[in-house]
Image (cartoon, rainbow, N blue to C red):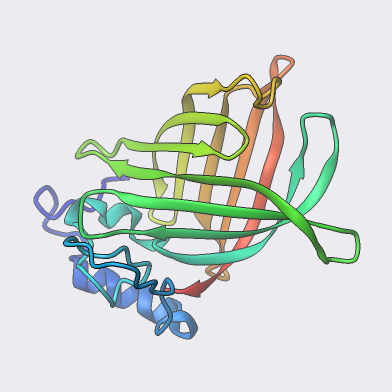
Length: 216
């Protein structure tokens, strides 16, 4: 795929057209955004997960534009002890007009009846993409993991990433190996993602989820 950098390809969508297409795809969430919390004034633009509100998306991020929003849904996880469990997730991907996206994920465990039973892992980090279509994603998690992923757009609705550096703190998961992730918009416009990890010489499922857009 050729990334939608206007300065490189005059035939690609401009920012306004891309935002209009996103607005049409997610009409129900178009008026909602990250809840504003006013504590003290900060002299820089606030994060927005709604492309129609706040600062304009940086032109360098157009290939990642469909990811911006607040997403929520459920998924499946495979714990380090072999346990399999269901989880709920809220994923916020936002921007402040600069050439990066902010990434914030909260998950919670779900019991066999579909009821939440307590918090699970949190992640926070950033997405960037170069003029050569190279995606950089960094994040740190609440269970003591820091990772750097590199990747590229798989197509206009999917993004493939592979871990280049996985660091685990002394109290973090001891068996977490390097992995790869795929994020993609499904035919129903939900966001699906899959994380696989290298275990005993092969890639195995680790976490996956399907999320619907609730804002943006």
